[in-house]
Image (cartoon, rainbow, N blue to C red; front, side, top):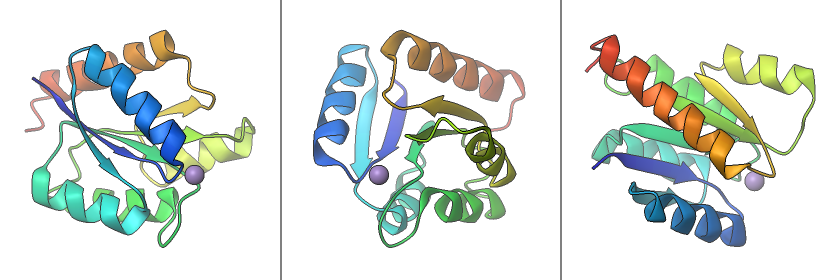
Length: 128
Ligand code: MN
């Protein structure tokens, strides 16, 4: 079973997305802010991180930069979640090291496809 770390400060979004992905067969870990997200990723090594960008304590860009600058967590794919559908945000997410990008509100089927793709690439590259 693949483990996904969902870093999302909005409780309703966090619970809803977490439940939907659990129903699709993923084991879910959740964090409420960027700092907690980084700590859990380091401790628990999830297979993938879904990272909200607008987060307290440490925002998603900064948290992703930290994960991607640590050789231990660098291989973990990070999919950015953002409410802002602006092109600049997508660019900013990739610059921070995000592997993919999903605009909120999340479209489940589209997000699942991105998750499957990121996990496949990670496996094929033999990054672990
Ligand atoms: Mn947020």
